[in-house]
Image (cartoon, rainbow, N blue to C red; front, side, top):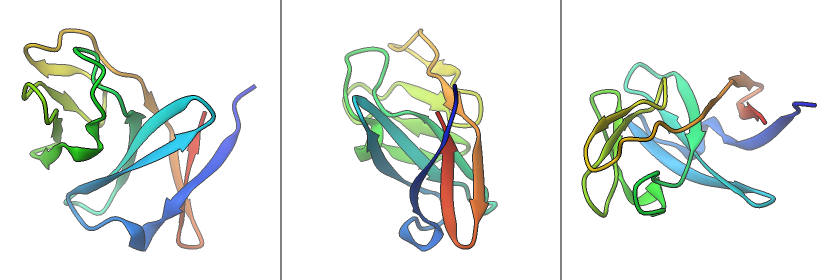
Length: 103
C-alpha cells in the first residue's frame, strides 16, 4: 500500500535544482522546478546506474553526470541517449513547508 514519506523541507532545494533522498533500498531525486513546483522520480540513471543527484537540472530535465543522458523530471521519460529506459515518477505534495513523496 502506498504511503507518504517526508523527503525534505522546501527550503532545502533551490529553484531549478535537486537533492537526493534515500528511503529503504530506494534512491530518489526531488526536484524544485524553475516554476517553484516539486517533482520526484527514481534517483538512479537507467543507463549505467549512476546517481542523478549530481546531475544538472535544466529545461524540465535532469542530465546524468556520467554520459549526459537526460530525463524529463515530470514524466520520467528518457529524452536523450544513451538512456532509453524511462524512470518512475512519484506523486508529490507540499504541506507546512515539507515535501512528501508517495511511494
